[in-house]
Length: 135
Image 1: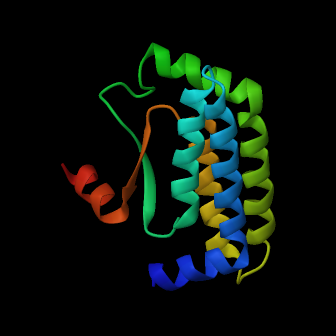
Image 2: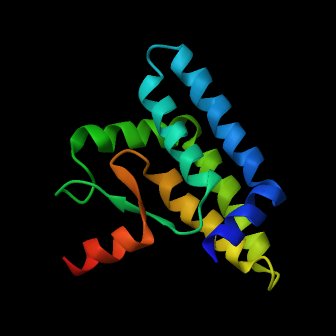
């Protein structure tokens, strides 16, 4: 089922989200200072290409990921992350207004979570997520 939904996701606009994040990541990586944020754009791109069957988790033992991750996430939010979050929030809520769009809206809302706090987050499959939750 995830494969079918991922194919529909790509056909109905997911590919444009993917290429947008790739372009943003490349642009940020051209500046030496922007490389950490470019890597986070690539993380969002990977998540946006096949969002069904994947989840985000915070890595490490600290809930926020440590002081450096907190600082990098604050800088991310101040210089563009807010627009990422608002964009996915808008599309997520709009798609959830229609019954057929609810699965796609939920994927946008999962990207809101990753867009708010990308540093320290990892993308895992649902099977890995269940295994981590029971461990």
